[in-house]
Amino acid sequence: MAAIAARLITKLVDVQDKHGEATVVLTGGTVGIGTLKAVAESAAAPAVDWSRVNFWWGDERFVPADSEDRNTRQAYQALLAHLPVDPNRVHEPGSSDDFATADEAAQDYATKLKEAAEAEHAADMSDDRPEEPAALPRFDVLLLGVGPDAHVASLFPEQGAIREKSRTVVGVENSPKPPPSRISLTLPAINTAQEIWMVVAGEDKAGAVGLALAGANPVQVPAAGPVGQARTLWLIDENAASRVPQQLVRKDPAGA
Ligand SMILES: O=C1O[C@H](COP(=O)(O)O)[C@@H](O)[C@H](O)[C@H]1O
Image 1: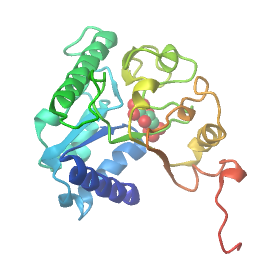
Image 2 (image 1 turned 180 degrees about the vertical axis):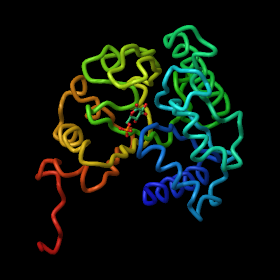
Image 3 (image 1 turned 45 degrees about the horizontal axis):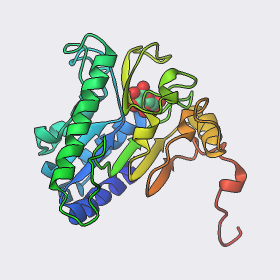
């Protein structure tokens, strides 16, 4: 995870050089949170101006704000509490303390994203500024873990959320992985990101990774769906890579 952390730090520095600020969409899960811990522990972390990083989440568990299950809480503990971030740039999906249903919290999160997109549009002085603001701000890097069942964010196989085409954020009920109520970016929203980094480790993810890279249908294998605008990176360990189709594995150039 130190290697992913180093890559993320470098990316944020590069984006800040170009745009003055950078936007990252965080994920929960073992590698997602492990990566944040590794960023906090990295000697290179001060190279980023953390006060000019915008933080969003790809998904959140719809539970009370102080629940250990919250992806946002885990991200604070692993990283955000240790850095000079600007609280106005940290955009958490709402909790069950503030909303009656995951759907309501999802709508609120979608509104916050839209407002950020409008502010970005208003500040854009470039010649190629689109006439209308988008529904989402520019996501420079969007991190995604993958579950053993191939879910990404809170988009689970065969559920309604993975089929969503028009909304940017949805409430999810009956998640097969607890807790059952969640909020998630949809696949079309995820795929607006410039770069999507799939961060995966462990033998239990090998089947999901193999099917995703073999080009499965995202409705059955959500991990097959994310495609970044500029690139999609699979940052995975050897165990998670053990069932990647052979034709996709780069051979040693020396032929050894
Ligand atoms: O529930 C979730 O699970 C996935 C993957 O988690 P992992 O522990 O199997 O790596 C995570 O990406 C997602 O954000 C989270 O809400």
